[in-house]
Structure formats: structure tokens, C-alpha cells
Image 1: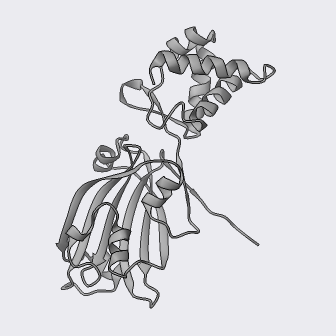
Image 2: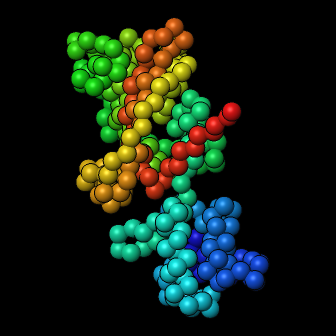
Image 3: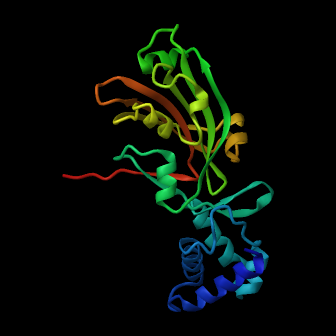
Length: 249
């Protein structure tokens, strides 16, 4: 959507918001509504502060305050060159064992991936411990950038013992579809989560700044009989993904 259309939509929505609200709150509500209705989609670049200010008849202080609070809350992000774009984090439930593709599709987002590596290898010391296999075991290692609507969201490295998946070419777009065809689809998983800043290499893959908070999730997946079928490390961009846990008493 071009800048003129974005500004027209925002002006329409501001006029529909409760006039008793402060101007920065009205602008934020208008922008949140445009995002939730997919008028402003993930990755959409916003006009500059001056353009928004002039088009909507608002002060630049009001526009700047609105954008700043939405960046703080993860709805917008500032990229290189000071451009501001829609972030709209994806929510991921930690109570269900679902694939990345299932998470994206269920939210109306087109899943995708960019393959970085897909090969037969020997396990690293970390993979040996996670999978419970000796150093001489053949494993399939797959590394890829996971995308939603074309935007990078995570870097994923999955490792599967070759006895479950003997050839990396059996994997097309979905690792879990390949495992299901081999009657080796995981039935339960254990996850460990930690945080760390993005390295320069992470930043290049995730299109973010070095130092951006990443959420690292290590997942061991099991078959119904207890065999460990998969170990995956996923580095999620904190700007793009929110994790949700439902607690019951």
C-alpha cells in the first residue's frame, strides 16, 4: 500500500475514534486498527513523521510519541535508515506441540523458509547429549531462516538421527511432514528457553541490529515409545515473536 493510501486510511480511522481521547491515543488506536485489519501488514513501511503530521493535522511531537510507544510495545520497529515498519509480533503458545508452519497458517500468515544447510553429518557434542547418540551416528542437520509473509522471524537448526530420516532430500518445505511420512512424527517435547543478544551473524540472517534481544528455544522431541527423534535450536527475533503460556489452577 502506498503512503498516500496509508495516510488516507489513518485519517478515516482517527475520525472514527472517540474524540475525547488524547490525540496520541487516537492515532495509536487508528494504527492498531489498521494493523489488525491487515490494512497495514507486517513489514509495511510507514511514511515519515513529517508526512504523517502534515497529512493528519497533528504535531510531530504527537506522532513521535505514538510511534515511540508502539515501538516499545513491539508493534512497530525502526530499521536502518530510520524507516519505521510494522512489526506485529506472532504469538506462539507453549502448551501445544505445533510446527512453525502450523503456527503461521493458523494466524493467516504465509509461512516460508530460506534453506541455509541440509545435509548428512555427525552430531556436535550438544546434539549428542540432546539426542542420546554416540559421535559415530549419522544425523540429518537442517538449518534455515523461517519467514512469515516473507519477513525473517527465526533461524532454526534441526538435527534428526538418520535412522528416522535417512536422506535430507526427503524434506521439502516441512520437516514434520517428512517425519510423518516416515511414521516418526513427534508426540511430545521438552523445551528450554533462554535469552541472549543477537550476534552480527544472527543480525544478518534476521534483518535486525546486532544486540537485538533473541529468544533461544532448545527443543527435544520424542516418539510415543520414548525415542528421541529431533533436537532443534531456534533463535527467534524478539521483535517478531511473542510466547504465550496458559496457566490453569
